[in-house]
Length: 275
Image (cartoon, rainbow, N blue to C red; front, top):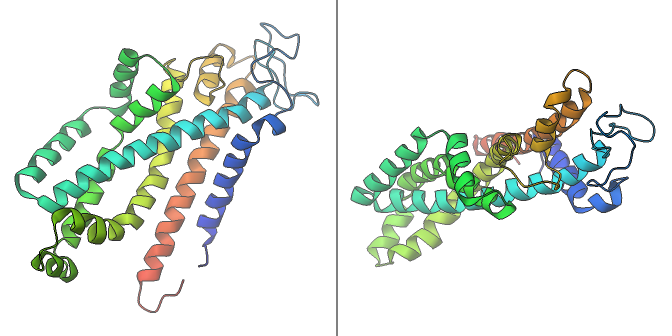
């Protein structure tokens, strides 16, 4: 298996994020929640001691960004697991059984699509109260519609294939058909949707954190760091610039990985193509 340039770049970027999150205590030069510079109320600019500067409370921005990768990846990936679980379940049931089940599930999906994800997430978080567990559950609950529609379309096509029709004719139960015949063939699409969807959950988490509905402080969060920097846009632009770049880097990493895999998969299906 040879990775294309886009896929390899995305994979390297994702691996770097994972390593930064896993080894944050070893990589970060300072404690992310403690003041390490006498700059209270007056953010310190980037320097040799603090490469990305310090915030209004004297905390090291670099350390907070490194530890913020833990929160962003944890929420992004865990929320995508919830998203995929809900979307795949609804898509498989709607596409395989069809009829009234398909109608009810797809109309429910259409209703969810009409609701702005960010506003719905804000309402749910406000009711459940911000916490790491509640955030990832809420993001998963508002992000599954795209996965459900794609999986349904794939399932509708696969359900008419000869191997599925033959297994049904031989008396295979519906559960076995879905698990043994439909799901394995939909799995590559699910993986792509999961990778690409992670970038969306990362952005949604950053948006909630920016609005004050993310993981509660003092836990470092990229979105909250940008929100805390709004007062200092003119006098200390680095406070918003570097967390914003971290969000951009993470979203770009998962998009490159997902679209790179799609490109390789598309070429592998072409006549005469090799992997």
